[in-house]
Amino acid sequence: MGGNLINRTFQSLCHRLRGHPSSRQSQKPGGFFLSGFVAILLVTAWSYTVEGRSLKETKQIPIAPQTSGINQTAANIILENQSENYATHWFKNHSREGAKGVALVIHGLNLRPDKMQAIISVLTESGIDVLRLSLRGHGDNYTHHTGIEEDQARLETFKAVSFPLWMNEAYLAYSAVQKRAAQEKVPLFFVGFSLGGLIGLDLFSSQEEVYYNRMVLFAPAIKLHTIHYLARILSPFSRLVIPSLTPDSYLSNDKGTPIAAYNALFEGLQQLEKHVNRRVNVPTLIFIDEDDEFIPVRAFKELKAEKKLDQWELYIVKKESDANQDTFHHHIIDEFSTGKAVWKEMMAATIAHLLAIKPNK
Image (cartoon, rainbow, N blue to C red; front, side):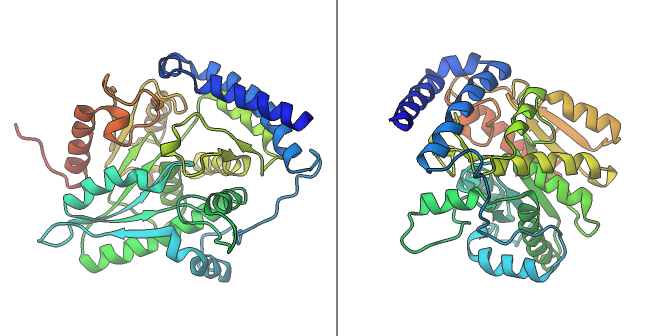
């Protein structure tokens, strides 16, 4: 009975948190976090009640190999064999003249990988081959079990992710992209959104053999608003799932995001702060909304000045009134989240940047 009461209370709170789109648009990051923190407390109790466990029983059951390095070790080979059919997908360019470049594309945290398709389509139409990476716990990249529904299997896999695991996947994907770029004798590009941007930058700054000729980053998670770091107090509860206020159509796991994934995000932020250097000073276009609820614009300006990243360029996104009002300012990855005209301008800037097309004077 207690569990049912908690469940009803939690559902009621979630309903109010989802609320009317206009209330979400006006909500400040602080208010969002406080509301979310109340939800977290309820979810914590509810999660462990329905699973029949006490809060002391938090031992994580790994589902996939967890590796700590980037080199091609035996563990990496196991990972490659396990996820190669699910983690990556190639999209061939539409140019009759051959590839003009090869791009690695990585999505954001708990975002459906196919939501990057709006970007990928523009890249392929412009003559760029694309390899899309689906990070572990997203899309089809999960441990498939006979007799277990795919949504549940994906979520269980998501509860066992780690930053080293995601970095291994990114490294393997980079290796494939680098090989094709070398064969085609064309530039190698990186395109990432949020968590994907963080992983791409981490890989670039920490691995000497990794190099991108140009990058396009959509609200890359190089730093969070200070208040969001308070979520680290829940780090011991790695299998706890936190509901998301993002529209379900964007979510890879509509039940929410496990603390394990947030732990991986925080580790990635620490690693980037430790490794970032002028190696990443290649022509880079960064899209960001000044009202982004998660990523502070000042973080890019500070990093650019501190590391002397003079080839980094900020592009401030101003969403249109016809943008989907259910999305956060953080979501700037398709015309539904930005507005049609703004999206068209963003994509024109993306292609001009990657292919080094000079504007007409």
